[in-house]
Image (tube, rainbow, N blue to C red; front, side, top):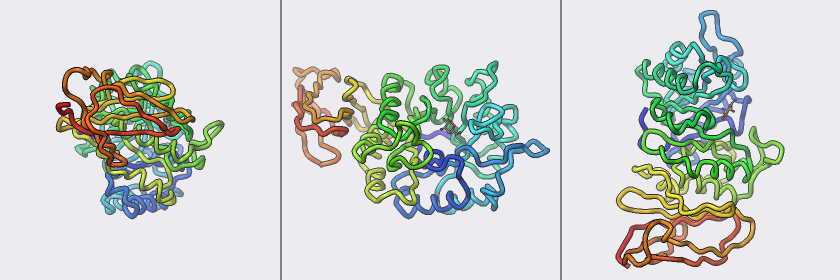
Length: 377
Ligand code: GLA
């Protein structure tokens, strides 16, 4: 499937890990609709690893675990579709998935056709246990072709954690999104490490293929499957920063929290129409990096209709004073033109900025996003 803008949805891994079952997925589908996520654009429900039995059946097919999914995957897909959502599943390019369930290596066409029969719209394809003689490039291309051979429109989500310079070849395999880093955990350290590792690697992002910075941890607060060791949750401000960044970076937005129980304030943050509008900009261009320091990053996005978004993202835990040098965008202060920006969160008219803008009292772990056009100064 070719998507013009970054895919949005929910994935089971961050919260549930191996503890998935059809009731959880049905209730999640209900919550996606009832709590406004679908209306905000989150359309995919993706079941990650651990959905099957440990062995294929005698005819070589993967079998859904009947204890976890007593009604079968087709019935579940039908239910998800009946809610107006799309249904996604998971496999792997090696003979086993990361959690040790059957992977699709050498069974790609059988599995792709089985998935299509279930009625999937999305396949996340992992990279564990891949035989060392097979380049990921070839196996991702193989599964992509297997999915296409089914005739069903399936979005192919490649998950090879940024290995083999994935950004250089993934678009050529027909994948619609690609994981570029190792797994996210529930902490500021984890999401900021992902961000900084990708800032300079966004060049191939655009309609049809997106850099997946991994599922969102917003609203998890140290609960679930990705809290361990030092990764014990974030503050509300840090989750807001994380979400604004993923939106601004044109990353796929895959929710990872328990959408059935997450608090209303987090729902509001995750469905912020202004942030989603930037994420879903139809031109889907990667950000232009004005500068990046460990304590803060300034980015510019070219948007459709000659608009721009400017983003300041602060990673330090003290109040800051900062100067935004718009000359860093290439706009010379003497050219006679400037950005006429509005703050997308407060609605404040910033006026026409041509040069340095001094900003005081910038709270720790905060962000500012301004949006507008270039006008005569
Ligand atoms: C890998 C992936 C994760 C998740 C797990 C499941 O680690 O990167 O996103 O799918 O496997 O086992």
